[in-house]
Amino acid sequence: MLLIFRRIFGLENCCPHMFIEVSKAILKKCGGLPLAIISISGLLANRPRVKEEWEKVKRSIGFDLNRNQSLEGMKNILSLSYNDLPPHLKTVLLHLSNFPEDYVIGRERLVRQWIAEGFITEERGRSCQEVAESYFYELINRSLVQPVDIHFDGKVRACRVHDMMLELIISKSIEENFITVVNGSQTIWGNSQCSIRRLSIQDINQELASELAKKDLSHARSLVITTSCCVKYLPSLTKFESLRVLDFDGCRGVSGYDMDGTENLFQLKYLGFNKTYIPELPSGIVMLHDLETCRLELISSLNYNI
Image 1 (cartoon, rainbow, N blue to C red):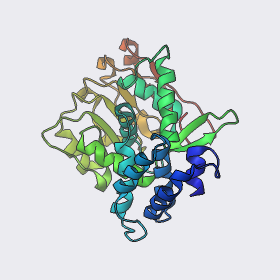
Image 2: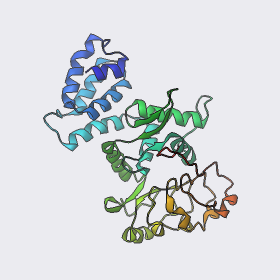
Image 3: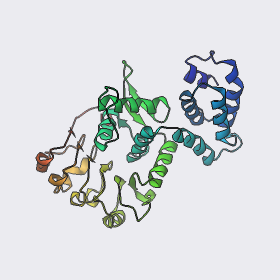
């Protein structure tokens, strides 16, 4: 209970009396599971401090997790946090489906991709960069992502998504045809009648490459590759016509990938080659007049792309 009070009220001993009983009931339903408590705390922190609102959250949780220690019970709590989000935060959270489990994602990499995708617009005199960064920190404040590498000035350099939260947002991405994730045996193609809107390749083999070759990629807005193996199985860039984001960050084998077709990606706004050790940029890059971000190799001791 102290964790909830500290998260919402700033101090452990300053909770108004009217919230104590409902807080105990909510904690009981969380079954002592840390992720459940953290997620509910993030949800309550962004709700009006009105007892009726907290009662609604308590009723929404359903069965006690200490009596129902199933994955479904935990997913129910995470779904509450997701469903409580405004549309703009749902969009940027779903975008994290691009990255595999335990992957550390640099803040700058994320916000530049959000901007390139068109998720971000200027607000009340704030630039797109400032708005995107505020979304990044709001995901952290709501305990939807975990901060990584916090500097002395409070700036967070990167984040990671808990595996159960990642499972939830991948399932939501499939439902909404937001991102198609190619990840070995865990690949789910979704509705065969829908074109692929965004493509994340995390693990691919010949069988998956053959299946992907049957798909229409002409409407895909992003291609994010987080695997360094089997470059020969990646789809040709000539199949893409609408890419805004092309991200090879951390893909060490990209130097063996055929970059023909780069010059025709006229809508491309983000191109990532960070930590790829690519010997030279593709010559077609000079034709990309809308390109806003080109991330090049930066050798660093850190294990993520800044």
